[in-house]
Image 1 (cartoon, rainbow, N blue to C red):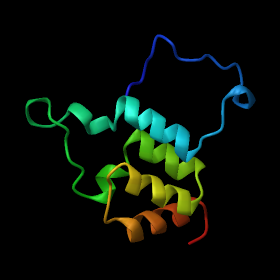
Image 2 (image 1 turned 60 degrees about the vertical axis):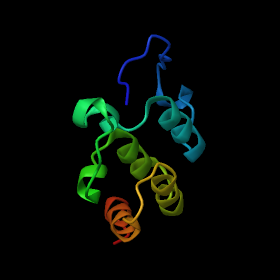
Image 3 (image 1 turned 90 degrees about the vertical axis):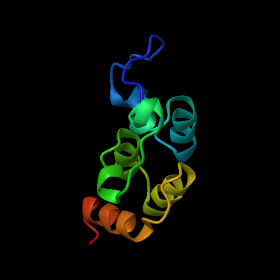
Image 4 (image 1 turned 30 degrees about the vertical axis):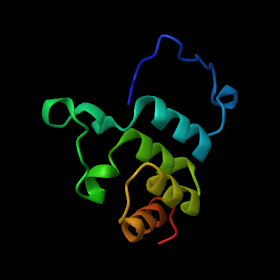
Length: 99
């Protein structure tokens, strides 16, 4: 995931920033990928082997913070992080005080 962009908007306050949606995160994913996109062997995409590794990714962290639980699980599936639905739901509930 790119941290700097020559065309990045400069918002003076949070109200000016567009809302975080599944669609906006998927657009970002298609453009930049996940943080592990070039961390593997010879520049190949690295693989998150556990949910604990995947949850540290900036895109996943943003989704977990701002999206609803069903939308968060849907986004994980859309970006190829399959098989961790139960862990993702539990993590989301713990973060939002619904455990």
